[in-house]
Length: 242
Image (tube, rainbow, N blue to C red; front, side, top):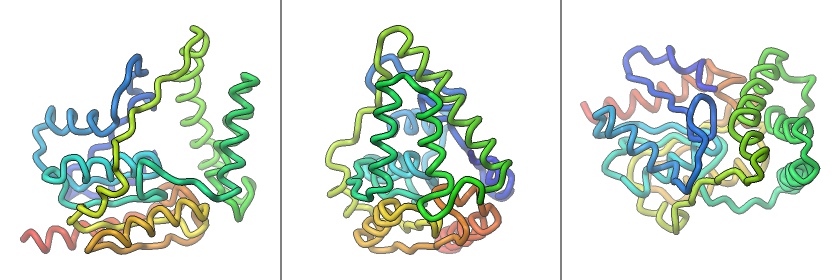
């Protein structure tokens, strides 16, 4: 998911962990908090502070880190989210959630994958307007997570273990005092844009960059523009520190 960013910042150490229940990470067997996993990783790598960048669920985890361990965060970059405790209202997004629930009830993984694909093109486009390579990449990532981390658990008659939320995260966001950048796809769902906007309204130093011709994954659809926005943010942090 972050391949276009991994080699784009040679002056920085770039770390892209797989969240638990995603990619090559482990399948959770008991309750856990994603932010605790990130903190454990930072400790294991000996990193006292980081600029944390997250997209969607990862953006929620990034906000959790800035709230629960502010001394570890130099800057915060979010994309397509502004909290790990979202209040979804957009009918387009709610319809996807209903489709997921039906797919789970009917044990139809293809329907579940098809619903997830809609986030790729967003509410204003169709899948045929997306790069076929990106569609294949998205399908590979979603299918891998489903077949590796979800279906084996369901086959054992169990429900997948969901991460435990950080309590009271939304009001705690007012305490974030590091610079915050939201890099959003201009064609993303209204809810995702709203979540980022609500976060920026709470912090003293926040701004947004809208990436044209992209929806929920601007780092993949328009990597050059995404990287330019992120690079400008990092350069500003380095200048302030220097």
